[in-house]
Length: 448
Image (cartoon, rainbow, N blue to C red):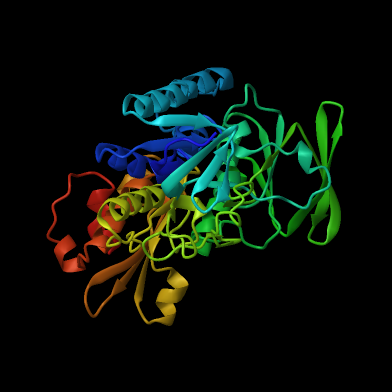
């Protein structure tokens, strides 16, 4: 059944779609919204937001442990079922609220897998919809792994909805997901093993700070196996046996669950992009600088599904969504801003990065100031042994070009440095600032 043409068909309801849908609706466009899962997107339902709730509990446990003998007594512990119930208070209402909002704004909503019929028609279930413009904002999905028994893996959204944690947990991969989940599970009392095929995990971050995080991970009972590779997973009663190699030798790990934490890829499977004349690579849908498909001008793509220079992060998806909305409404005049892309892995302590990396800075002759902050007041008062920052400065101009931080105040500092880099503030300007004291921000003058 073919309906009246829509001004916009939006495939996806997360951060990469939100601005496009809301701004075009405000402009009076007739809009169809499609999602194969619950409305609301990954970040709100099965990503950043619920993960941070769990990470907050892990942070509290770590703080309690650090302060034992420093005036704090007693053992705090995580009651997993209660923590998950608390997490659900942030996620349960999102799908209905999202869909109700769309409907109240006069949009048509569809649940199901979307696929192209031709350049301007989309099939969803038994419906065929025609769109003057089509937004693809389907995000990313776990990368398939060449593992015998891969069907036994659970994924990030499964972990974030577990009713109980096993006594032993294996995480395959050495990126954000693996380390964040490891630090949560370990603080909840689970024995955790991370199996990473390379020599260096978390390769997006400064290697020296990663090494410090590895020491902290080992201290809290997380076993990180580098140069290790999973070959097979088999079920043995109520447990799983993970077979593979470690440093070239055969090895086995026994556990209650095996979690996929080995990266994500653009979620384009099943969209039948060829029928829509939408070109793509393994990095995602090929778009121009305005996020418009290079092969089908009706189509725009935003977020993790697009092949842009933007990192796969929620704020960047939002940035791209805003750019697409303006380009649809005003013509192609707006490009997403990739100048500053702060990134944090929410371990305990957290690890963050923004701007130029240290290796590149040294090649280009910029100054790299390294600060071991573990003895600074901000970190000593909470007994944090692992706190370090590296700040990259162009001495000729005084501009700050990059910052890399490990510690309990990483979120605050990385965002401050992101603002500094975005607006080209200099060290002289920062030194005239009066920050509330004592805070991590008030350490900024010493860091630069």
